[in-house]
Image (cartoon, rainbow, N blue to C red; front, side, top):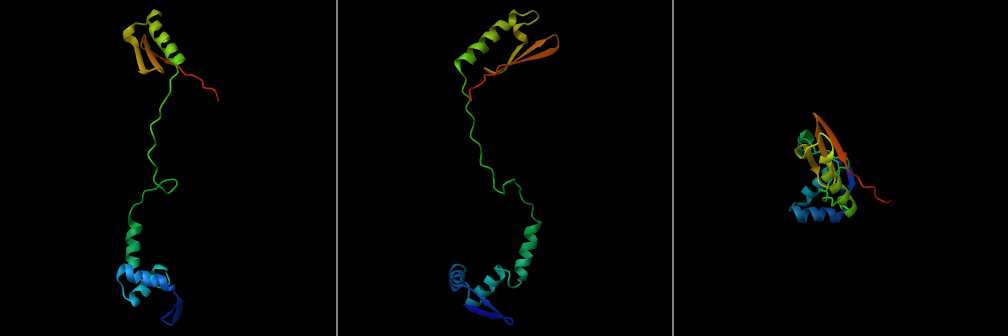
Length: 132
């Protein structure tokens, strides 16, 4: 469809005009003006005001431009060997001099132990190397 406005000729797809008329209940002239304004071929004061207002609103910025999906909780598999080593270390710590059961703190089960000796903290971290 060829449309002339203000001495200029515009080629506008008829199906898009019909779609605007059906969906928004617009007259043919209003649909043509809306299409021209949406495609920035004419200036519309109402759209300018809305654009100015939208630019003033704060936006949420992310690195990819999309919202990050919530991550699934990680399930750690602890081998029987690691459990056995952790239990052995934990039960035999009080055999060391100046180490008492009340000074032993298990921070993370099967992983991390803090021992308080003479105002110092000693950290024992048990790590199992996995095969690649």
